[in-house]
Image 1 (tube, one colour):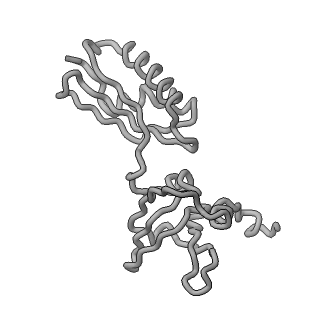
Image 2 (tube, helix red, strand yellow; image 1 turned 180 degrees about the horizontal axis):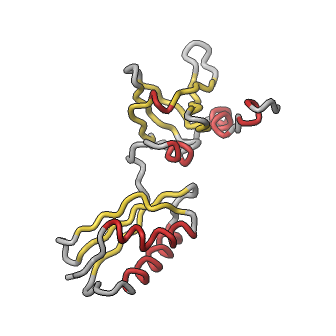
Length: 179
């Protein structure tokens, strides 16, 4: 049994610099001290996907840092993982990181909208949707304040090229008088 485990806050402080160094933020730390052996789960997210090599490297560095903490004795299981596809998108950074993914939104006016995440700029999400009348792809601006819930949808086929292109367009040049 592991004893003397750091608190959630202490773990975040201990590991944050190492995770940030390779481009990831710690979203959450869950400690199950009752499990045998104790289980520590670190949920990390970044602009790049968390691949298996990065998980392994972060796990090794986190274990080394944790093992060096005075008072931590016994065995524990350390798991580093990403938030998972079912995590709701709540902050603007979540939408930026989900760019190009298909999502389902529940809006404050009671409507549901499904579309592809485009740019998130100045509190406004560009959502690529198919116009019901013309069947053309269009960009629907939605204020972050209007979004009650947003969840990434699992896709089993590749998106249409035009739809994906609209989701990846950088509109900052358009709004700043550029092309």
